Image 1 (cartoon, one colour):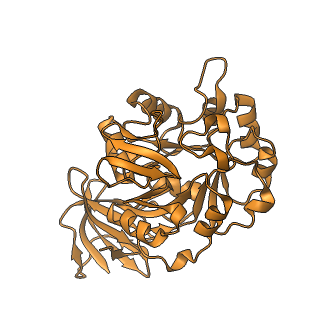
Image 2 (cartoon, one colour):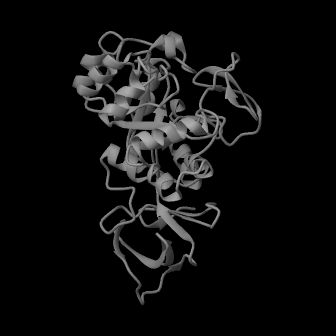
Image 3 (cartoon, one colour):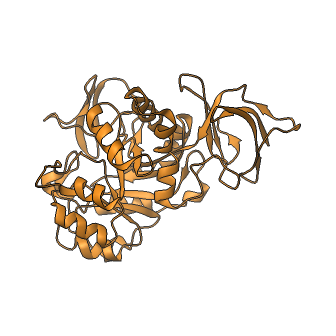
Length: 351
């Protein structure tokens, strides 16, 4: 398959795809699908998304969610569970992910239950529990685990876990965060949210992450993190260490009203989706919306897209996130205002 007249990095070229891989990026006489000079970017990879359109990952309805993700420009993702009964988490992740169409599932992200009650955010406290590596090993298809390194057994868990460990929903100090990173933690979960602030004599997990150069997830929806904080993290870590995430929850794509998320009652309004006490309960946007907001904040478009494609791909260790020969043929076609025109997954237009 050849995609003609793709605008990539300011230049018009053709994209040739064979067996789901990009095999050529040059003008060709082959007939193909005309992209009409519209911009092409690497497919977006969301490492943290709980659901949308009234459906939660916890429910196990992953195929429907992958369809909606693809329709909105996400080509790969980590369906993310929340802090619920352990049997619900096991049921959600125990499935044949290779047979699911739509946005490709790289694996699952388990956000909780191994977190701090004092920084639970919109997670259900009654299901929070101590890390148990034996219990975790009963889960299937897990690619990432959010964990609070200060809770009993967390550091040992991080050291022995075969998934990517991400520091989040934590009240840990700088020293504990450094220790967790040295034992293998590779990421911060939704940086700034549900963790101590960075202070000049108590830099906390954010200071540890900046010093050690690990990855940092960032919800750039305009509500969770202010523009100045987005820019501060961007200046500190750069596009190669920030992963834009949606942290989308079930009410995403639905009208204002009353809903549930992770078993908790939430209200969706112009002020976002919140618990009764006003706590933000996750975002109600897709990853492409976060990229657009980063660009609106003044971050160069090239870097904004890198933070939602190449950087999460490198964190996850997958052959995605770049429009280069040999990479998976996952890309999106956008108009001049970054509105989605086509989603291509494995070289095929998703409809």
